[in-house]
Image (tube, rainbow, N blue to C red; front, side, top):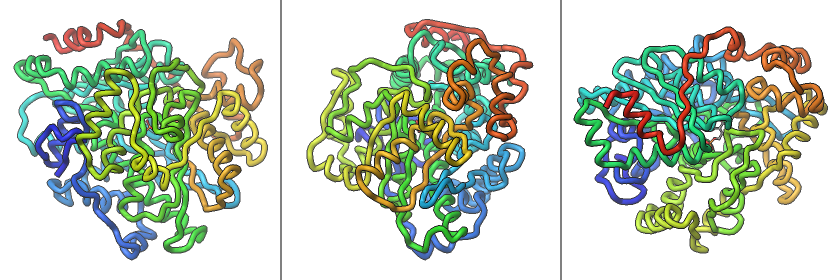
Length: 498
Ligand SMILES: *Cc1c(COP(=O)(O)O)cnc(C)c1O
């Protein structure tokens, strides 16, 4: 069963948790218990395909799904039509003891595809299971990558409408075009004059708005979420922490039971939380390294125990991490305090009211055992891209570069040589201007056409352009709506004809 982090909702089945997206009264669903795998069970998965490992891990969490239903979801999501690499999420060796987990071979060139290719299938099955006859409206707030990945996953899915809100002029040109050119008979994209936190805040408020939900229900609509506040979005991400480990084992890079580190470029704390669940399930993990950009609210939190979002919001060259309210931290704190919902509620209410909260020392000590946190500046991000390309001929996107830089800081300060996997969360082509600026200097990108730059980058790094980004300039722009941050609810009403 799935329970609320704030203790304000009766336990629900997996399908209900996925269907609801988040707890209607505020709070997030987490599994009542984390399934544990023995070392033998983990080692026995060595040599299995991505799909086979996914089947095993997902089955442990979706109690009210049949094996064959999960298999159908896995097969439809992870195949050669959607992913441009036979391993789905390959691990490449950067240098001694350092590996890159490429999570960007999906249809939108960022790691969000790993979960958003399968979530629609979970959701459709969940809706059927709970016997709902309503149309489901998926509300998405995006800092750039979730939007397109969700649109691709949900477009033309029967019984579903998807509405995406992104910060107007707060995403890269390519990200914007990816979203605004989406076809499909059930897709809506709205640019909001505000930042990601404004979008996410408004969407969360709508989820918690009882009156509005009542109105929607009367009109035959149900709300759900494709953001990582939805358990169905987090769960598929646990899988690749296992496959990456098994992959190193298979290649003989590590020995059975050897602990490794994972470095995760972090925004909403979803991806790194998935790594933590893998660790709690028994995966041999030494440290989880949380990497932030200049919006380093998480770095400060892990260093001081004080979460304070009252600060300047910065637009950085790793926009998918430009976040000051990391939603999934709530789940993590609930887990790390041994399911203390009273305290979580208190902290979250404080955060809502004053923009900050402070955790107790005991909780902080628990966290310090597993998490290391640091950040990379804008300049360091560019320098890292340049250096890694010149040293190893490997092109990093800016988000991954943040992670690489923080890992260097970690090694230098902690002297830990444990083998380490760094999550690569986007293809360098998706952030081509920043990558080219880093490698060739800012002159190389001034007044240049975005799509010529893709070709230029392709020549320089000697890799084909990611198929998801080719021909984007030839597609018609189908979504042009812009609204202010106070008009988000009105836009939804307009779209649904309320
Ligand atoms: C979403 C995203 C992140 C941050 O992931 P979280 O799960 O929100 O912490 C990092 N890099 C890229 C490229 C992303 O799209």
